[in-house]
Length: 104
Image (cartoon, rainbow, N blue to C red):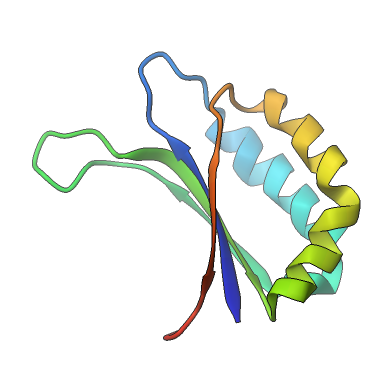
């Protein structure tokens, strides 16, 4: 199992529409990827590690897929459509990481 994490750094004056991301963008991604995406989660940043500090990321999503090849097969054909929707919810450049899930 792999996890594809897309993280949006919390920067001053950045725009992020959490409701659009949760209710429209991520369900669209899941629908386009179909069975290639086993599941996904969405996180909304609340705070940093030290008291009174802001969250490092304003939002994150995590796509869970059986393998890197499964992710690529599901995401690749729809990458342009998915990327075109980003402007509808944010002006933040995302950071992406693909990880192997070693404990579930």
